[in-house]
Every structure is written in structure tokens, then in C-alpha cells.
Image (tube, rainbow, N blue to C red; front, top):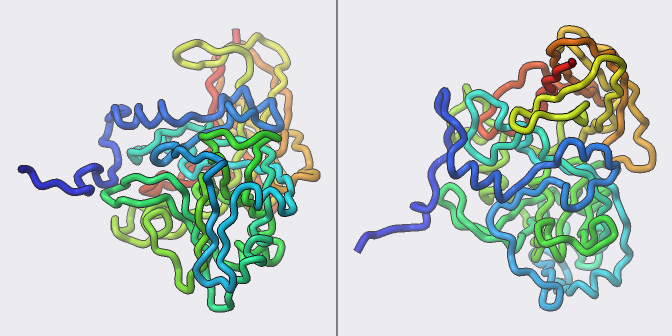
Length: 377
């Protein structure tokens, strides 16, 4: 009898060979997951069915009646909370733009072989839930605790490692200390005023404003306080920036906050296959959204000539939703011919989108400026 192990279920990470097309496995991932149709940038709050979805393993059968959240580890009072107990705690609503860390991966060359995102792995929702710091305060975090580890109900194999999906946050961030990323961390049970859909983490998920989507653990069932850095697969192997000149086993740098990005809602109307946009000559109003996990977007620029020259667009101020994208608009005077439209964002810390993307092995944080082919006739 053939001897097999769980390691035989998955292949090692790799990059596509020169000229290699999308594989059957990547196509299967792209069919299971989906991005935001860019015309949906018209909505300030993304309808749940249009919000991007990435499911690492399976959507688990997690029902609200028998579901419980355990809080354990280095706490004074371990907790086991059902959904009714959580809903009885004070809740808040945050409007949060969420983006997959791999957004733009398929545009890299060579292409890291994984979920082949173009630019649509993003969405903005109104998430309602219990501030995480309230639950941690009720449990009583012990002073020696260093990190909080969050475990989801989804279970699978990745690069030969059998695992539950797990991620961690520093205790200070998780407990909401200061005004940084932790101050808005939620145990969310509601999306846009309705119970979480199954693909978005029903009945409970973590929401970490400003961070890429891998931090927003779905189908959350356990929080464990630990006194050492968490070294699970999704923390120390996956979701790391590793440059081309680094060894494959280099620890790299952790993927955390969302890099600035602006996206344009496609103008005119599309060709079915190529998605090339067609517009008629004259003034064309362009619009879209821009965001950054490092602070407000302070400038959006538009180019009608493939990035050779830039003009400033009008961008709305951040307003009452500090973790949500901002609308931008401009008018382009279209003349007959072929054009490449581009748009880029700069945030308050001076971070701006690159014209050429530095490459990394996982294809993470690729915020290369958007390029939209347009035919004016």
C-alpha cells in the first residue's frame, strides 16, 4: 500500500515560468473567490454580494445556535460566550475598507502562483460588533501576555501544513491601547445591518481596520492570550514580504497595513472579452475611490497618457469614517484614439503608488498604479 501524508496534498510555493498561463488550480481559486466589479466603486458602502471574497479553505458549517467564542490562555477569567451573550455587550459600527494583501498579484512578472487577483480584491462595509477590548477586559488579560491569537473554524492544508486558520495581534493593539489600529478592532456579527453572510464569516469575525484582509479572521471561535510571538503558518510563513534577492526560507517582513491605492470606475462601456473601454469624444467625468491603511489620502492624481503627465483630481476629505475609502473625481477631455488612463493616491504620511512595482515572492502589497485601456471613437 502506498504511504502518503498530508504533505502530499499540496505543492511548494513557486512563481510561474515565463509565458506560463493561468493554471487549472489558479482558475479554480478564481472561481471560488471573487473581486469587486470596478463599476461597483459607485457605492460608498459595498453591497455584500459585490464585496471581495477570499476563502482560504472551506466555508465552515458554523451555525449561530451552537456557536461559542472561547477566550483563554493568559487571562484571569476564561470565557465561553455564545452569540446572545456577545450581542448583549455594547456594540459599535465602523465603516471599514478591506483589501486582500494579494490584490494585484496576477499583474506581477514573474507571477507568484496563487489566487490570481487583478485589482478588485477590495470592498467597504459597515461592520457592527463588540469592541474587542471590552471582551479582553472582561476576561482580564494577565500582564505577561504578549499577543492574542485568533482561531477561525476553517481548516485545511497549505504547503503541506494541516492547520486551522490562525493569526495574532500584539496585546496592545488587540486591547485598543492608544489611537492606532487596535482602537477599532471589532468582534463583528453584522455586515451592512444584516447578519454576516456565510462567505464573510458568519456568525462572527474579526475586523482590524487599516490592515490587509488576512488579519480579519473569519468564523472566529477562539482567542488565546500567549506570552511569546505566535509562529503559526499564516503568521510566520505566509503573509511575509520576501524580496527576489532573499533566500526562499528568509523570514522576511510581516504584511500588516494597507498600502495606498486609488481605483477608477471604468468609464464608458466595455468590450465583452478584452474589457477595453469605449468612450465618445468630449468631456468624460471620471470617478473612483482611494484609501490607505496609514491615514487619510491627501492627493489623487490622474494621467490620460499612461503616466507621462499627471493632473490633480478632487478628493473628498475623510469625514466621519476614518477607516473607509474616499471618493475622487476629475474630468478628462477625450479625443479620438487609443489611450491608457491611470490614477494614483498619496496618503498623509507621504506614501504614494509606484509606477513600477518592487517584486516579492508572495505577490503582496502590489499597489502599482491602475492602467485602464480606453478607445475613444
